[in-house]
Image (cartoon, rainbow, N blue to C red; front, side, top):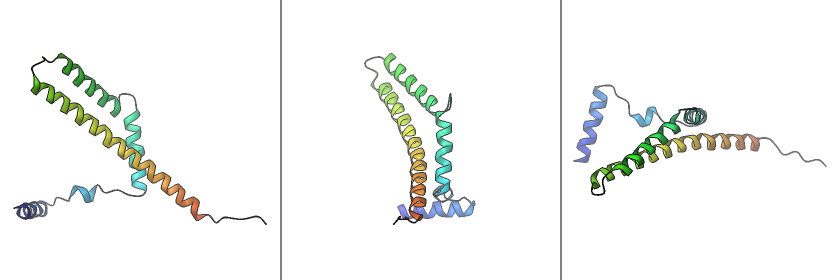
Length: 120
C-alpha cells in the first residue's frame, strides 16, 4: 500500500511539474550561514518572530487559566498549542545555530589552511 501511495505522489509531482521540497530547500555552505543570519535578524527584531511566539504562548496560558476545571478537552488543546509554539521556536533556534556552526567551521578550516611558521 505504501509503495502505491509513493508512486501516486511521484506521478502527481511529475504530472504537475512539482519539485520535492527537500531538494529545493536543501542548504549547505554559505547558504546555511546566510539563512541563519537572516532568521536571527528576523527573530530578534522588535515585534519579530520571538515576540510573536511569546505572545501566542502567553495567550494560550491565559486561556488555560480561564478554562473550567472539568473542561479537559480545551485544556489539552491549549497545552498542545503551547507545545507547537515551543517546537516552532526550537526549529528557528536550530536554523540559527546551524548557521553559527557552519560559520565557525569555515573559520576553523581557514585557520587550519595557514601554515605554522616557527622561529628558530
